[in-house]
Amino acid sequence: MDELYALKAWKLRELLERREVSAVEVLESVLGRVARVEGEVRSYITLTEEEARSAAVSADAARAKGEEAGAAAGIPMAVKDVLCTRGVRTTCGSRMLEDYVPVYDATVVQRLRLQGLTMVGKANMDEFAMGSSTENSAFFPTRNPWDLGKVPGGSSGGSAAAVAAGEAVWALGSDTGGSIRQPASFCGLVGLKPTYGLVSRYGLVAFASSLDQVGPITRDVRDCATLLSLLAGHDPLDSTSLPGEAPDYLSALEGGVRGLRVGVPRELMQEGLTPGVREAVEGSLRLLEELGAEVSEASLPNLDYALSAYYILAPAEASSNLARFDGVRYGLRVEGAEDMLEMYGRTRACGFGAEVKRRIMLGTYALSAGYYEAYYGQAQKVRTLIVADFEKAFSRFDVLVSPTSPTPAFGLGEKVEDPLSMYLSDVCTIPVNLAGIPAISVPCGLEGGLPVGLQIMGRVLEEAVLLRTARALEEALDFRASPDPVRGEGK
Ligand code: GLN
View 1 (cartoon, rainbow, N blue to C red):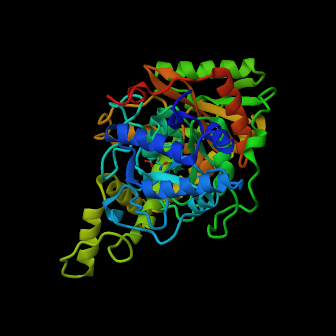
View 2: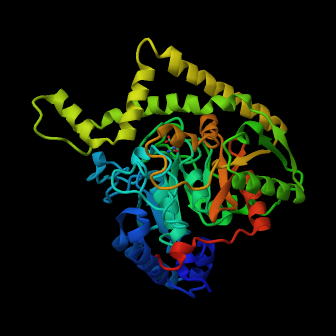
View 3: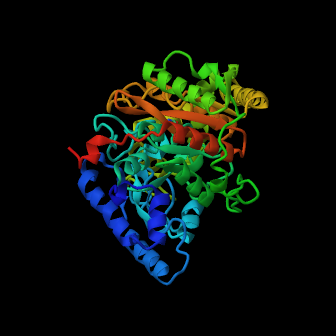
């Protein structure tokens, strides 16, 4: 049998429920793995071993008494450091919040606690979730467990690397323009961005509030369905939370894809894809056809403008959200200023990194009097056109399929000096956030030994259809490769 740290959550849960292994044994296997590989992978900003140990002991005690221990009990998890955790430092990958200890839990964390959350640590990320490689973390970059010279993707790179390296069994990420799906695809994992409003944003430090969603990063589709079921559902503390409780996504997993109408947006299959990505995506489409789906080309002409609109809207919202970091209410304050304005200026100059400053400037400019209509107003209109494009496409198709990212993981340092090429790595994922629809990334092949992800997009609140499609593909592809460099105990 594989080592415990390498098993899927559902498998571990079976073993735990049959009392064939204890939660403490599972956790020690994962912590042993952390001890061996974390020095190179660097998935975590903060480790919470003690908290995890006491959760594992409670899970074992509950199971020994024959009680229901909860679906997350004894399953070691990484939590992206953008989610507030009571009593545990929450940095957002920023100097600004280096010593910030929240006094409350994000709703998703709270929900998982009720299910026995066993949190190994807070995962590294691009500062305030702005980036696609985790190199914008103020602390250190995370490496891709498949190839330590490559990035794990971002901004939830620490979460994905931890799961791929065996330093956690599943993880929470957040996705504003691709930050769950792209790292999942770079690390050979499953990642899902839920419908806007399905999962609570309460306690998620805001980047762009109209786009942000929390979601799962897991080793397979079944774990993704389980974790999503634990996260989803109405939260009165989030004014954009949708009403109603979420369905049990696990029960909808095995229906297959016979008769499913699959559209392939031409605009997302254009130039810029590497040959291996194109091949893996086309192979998956053939497989879906063999499984009984009807595959044909779709066109969503306004997708060509999605990236431009996003890079107005997201920075505009960010410039407003990040105004709260003023040296007074949260986190860092640089001392020694003569007056308040100087204190604001110095604190923000010192607390934010280059990419965050670039976004604040872009956003402030786009919102400034005289330019507002020309930039922000236009971008909002484009967003509406994109929503309409998707609506139209979904009247003909049940799901839309594309690569998650046009390339596999790129090299560390390769794009840091070139923000535009970094932004381009999200061309396929960003339209989904603008439209508020759900999408999943599922591994569909390898190029040069690195994983390639397939993105499946669906109608609002049709996560079950995405999971069922992804499950059928996962089963047919039988993608079993695993990251060798760290599987062999690091190099
Ligand atoms: N990479 C994109 C950006 O930098 C998306 C980030 C995200 O989804 N948080 O904005």
